[in-house]
Image (cartoon, rainbow, N blue to C red; front, side, top):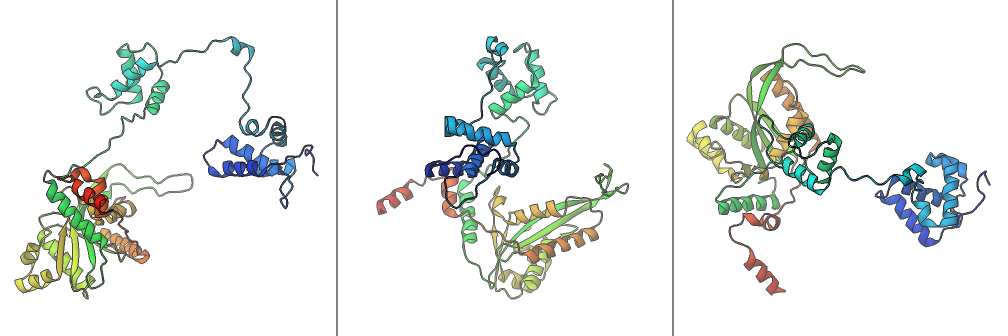
Length: 399
């Protein structure tokens, strides 16, 4: 047996199960997990397990050999709980004589800090900062002396984040129309769609073309990429995103404008080029005034517009309900992966969009929609004009 194994540790089945649970859960303090692993490796009671020496345990867990010996001796002399917990340091004689100091922020002062933080910031400032709030507390003589760290701890304790603002979108006043259109879209997502009648989501966006005034300095080892703050404006391009969430296919194109004619031409390409074999295409889009059958008749002769309209079935998302259109997810990914840089010309933008589109289509990234109509009636119950009491009563009567 190696050096340092003077006393043997024999764990019971219950003790070993408890120590194994502590070492695996990931929620216990780091020192407690370390001590549990040391005791498990010191155990010699279980048959068929490797007998570790103190030096081997110390090398495996990257601790000193004396630490392993102290944990083992503490377990043998005092038991399991003292061996797992950290040993508290003894107070010095000076510390024993010193009375405990009163907290710098009592309940009244903390209430003043919370009230001031939740109020409007001074004129000319967008929000409260820790430095500004500390200065304001002294200015109003709420406290005579306080540090920024004390204010920061008060923020953290009460979960105050004056620099953060969460935005919300209130649905339109006609709630009945909102929930009716929402349930149509949700039912559409829950259905199965064949190749003969595919489901396509469509959305639009705009992107600013910008160029460099001075050529940027490329990244090198120990040096980040550098570019000048100034840039040139080269115009705006309209983006048209068509996305098949079930097939994992998307097409994105750029145009100079986003008129009715532009939308009609994009729809004709969708029907005749992208899905020529489809009998009918179910198109989900927002309530923009160009997204309707009338745009087809403005762009093409009546026979051509009628032919396209017979193969198109349009579903509009409700007002202030664009989150129901999964094409917005693809536009967000496009902005982060491809458009988060300076692109000077429409030709280069077209090439970059084509390369991004080919890569995404090759991976066939899909969207699996989980939010159903029944979920909406529970989580968005406040949007329904009539409370669903009758339905719940009838369901209980069935049982």
